[in-house]
Amino acid sequence: MKDTQEEPQGGGNEDPEITLIAVANETFYIVEGEEHLDEMLIVDGTYPTPILMIHFDTVQDIHAKMGETINMAQYWTIHPKIIARLRDDKLLIEKVA
Image 1 (cartoon, helix red, strand yellow):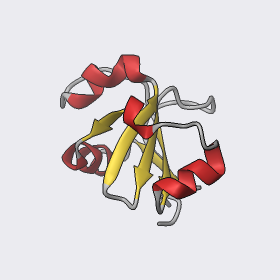
Image 2: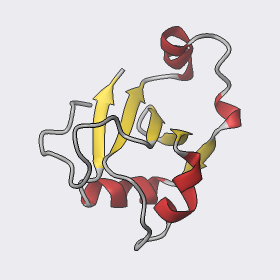
Image 3: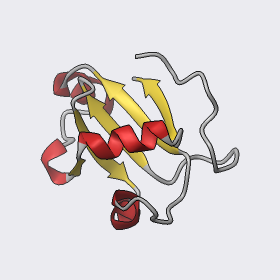
Image 4: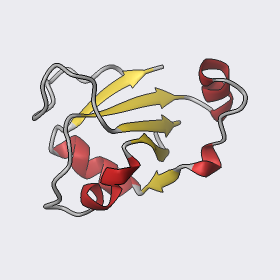
């Protein structure tokens, strides 16, 4: 997946408060900003934007980049339809790891 070409809406130049990890563009985890999870899941929620999403092909790639001790089971998963809504609303900065 390429970095998004359009600028996400909201936010400024600071680092995003919410970071998601995508595995094979099928499974999505929130790894930073969990305190905003409830608001992010509802359509009219209030949460900081933009949201950073880092794409990995496999969990092994995550371990290679972030260390063997990272345990993806400790993070909340996000339903793909929520991710689709965030994309449609242009709230994601998508990067390939």
